[in-house]
Image 1 (cartoon, rainbow over the protein chains, first blue to last red):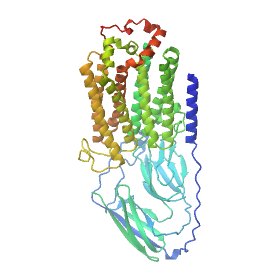
Image 2 (spheres, rainbow over the protein chains, first blue to last red):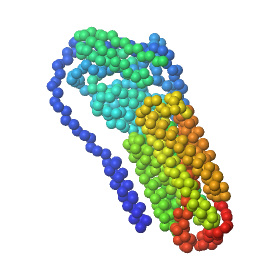
Image 3 (spheres, chains in turn red, yellow):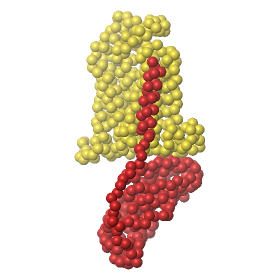
Length: 255
Length: 337
């Protein structure tokens, strides 16, 4: 009697777990045919250049204790937090800036190059970056220790993959635009990064001096958004004329 | 019987260690440090190299290893009970514990594979406490005190059975603690631990001025803490006032009050320390300890409800038959812890 009860229980669990783990086929959707947009003449392309500035004194970078993994202690070259990357002239780095609105139904050639996202010295490199929908993201472990790459998107599929061996790499693509997708290493809690996923190629990440350049942009009126991991987002409207370079500056304030 | 009881106690301790390890996993946000299950980074669980137990893997994989030990100990318990235990309902409880620990393992795996969905993670936390309760109960049922009915005479029995306040409090208290644990697990797995960042006030006021789901969960846990503490104090105070002769009640009641004070303090410190790992984890462990203590007290108080079962068991257990104190003697008194 007892064995029968146990086996009945095990059978139920097996069925439940089996059905839970079975997953579902990816859904297919049919998109109504969109008329092709007017051809974009590259000779008329303009650009947006500018600088993101930080006002106020940001919190001092904190030292990261990596002693939970001796390999990280040995290999790390950067052991401070990187929430605020501020240059000498007050420029704010690691800001993702992109055309949020204004491109309409234009389509753009698919990106053929691969974006590499590396784990080196127990840090993610780059910390903030952009990628196109459908573009290949190569995730590489350059450390002789275990990492897991845990992406927590809301519009794309969440994934959590382990890379226990140095030199391991795998590829992923994103299927929907999303600003931003956070990455986290759950083994090393200090490792995090963000990727902006867009349909179009008009985005940039500010360098350490806070400067950016979005080039080869069709003339038009745009809404531009700047995103920072701690300071949130700001938007501005801008007009880009034929062959012109529009200047655009943002100022984030930290209290 | 003695060694079976000690084995149960060992298993209860191992379960408490497992709950602590689970608390460490959540307190350090290491739940997804091992992305695969049942393997660990492709390794068979027991062959994963110790040298690679780094960072969050130490907590998550350590939790899995301790869980395996508890699972094996539970299988051992079921075998032992099947061979030596004459009470059918106790043997069945052993099987139930095994079913619970197997289910618990699957829930742990599913929550990893599906990126910690709160519903599954909260169920995992809730079932952990139920399993702990089963093991603690089995430890009580196999104890010498239980078998000898704590050497209560008929007057003692009447005093306990007739005390409806005691009977009610010793049911309400563990039940409320378990509900409070579930609310705490909900708080933990929905990220509401610091939804109200100050203590003892909430945003500087007695009642939060603004509300959202996380604040509501957090505030419910605080209200629950007050209710639980009140029930614990009422239960303990009642036993101290009316049943001072019954050491099997006084001891767990005293322990329960001490543990509840510690638990309340740890809850406050968890907020004030912004969820410091050690404090946050200790809050989980102490919560289980409080639940277990209240459960022991409840079972001992309601010992008479198991009388018929014990009688049938006594007829088939030579050890019980040879124990003269199992026969109530009117007018005599005695106490056993």
